[in-house]
Amino acid sequence: MTATDSRAVTGLVLASLQRIGEENLLVTIDGQEIELAPRGGTGTGGGPPEYSLDEELPGTNTAVYSFASTIAGSESLGVFVLGHETSPAGLGEIGAVTYRIGIVGGGVQTINGADPLGLEIMGDGTIDVSFDSSTISGRGTIGSDIGAGTAPDAFSIVGGQIVGNGFTANIVRECPTGSTCTSDSKIGGAFFGENAAEIAGIGTIAETQQTNGDVAKIDGVIGFSGAKDVSTQ
Image 1: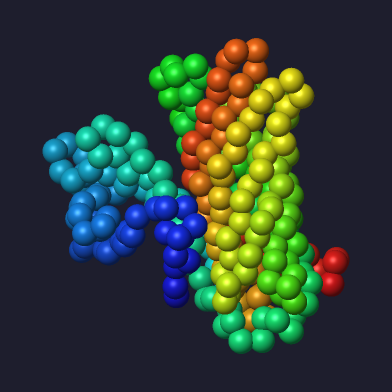
Image 2: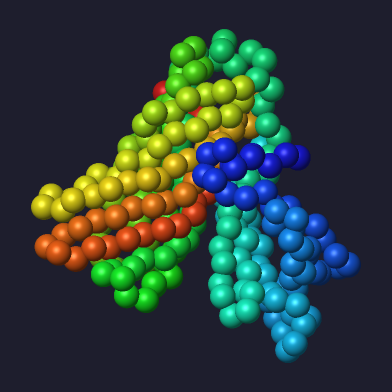
């Protein structure tokens, strides 16, 4: 089992998880160790800070996990991918493939610099891969649990490049009419299983939208995974 290394893609720091005893986890972030206990477990009432770890998008060869922790009253969320990575050898012979993906994550939204509001991120899409030319592209929609009834935002995946059995790309959100938008969202991931049966990875969301003088910012993290769309094979 290996985890995709997202540091070159998102600028995230090196981190690791290690179990301590039956329940607690030791999180190491760039050499700094933090012990965490399960929510509702021994971490309550003066013990170590608490955590939750959830499998979000399980597949046959890979899965996305979300990791939430509360340290000194501050809530943090991270996502990571575990799976059986595809060997780079022979990927160039697969040709063109389309994957259907699910997207999960979380973040914060601020409007005109007000206090940030936590949000849950969800979505879906397709990723088109050309192993011949080592490029990827795609499209989809992404939304949040803020603003019930609001249509999800459309996005495109652009500038995707495959290196070995991994890839990086940018996400460009479709800007609403009458607004000015800037996007610095990125993803990175790898292929998993025999003949690159599945795709998965993580990313950072960094979006700014200005409408009629109001400035809304969303910052977050996402995980995504999916399998080949057999209808396109």
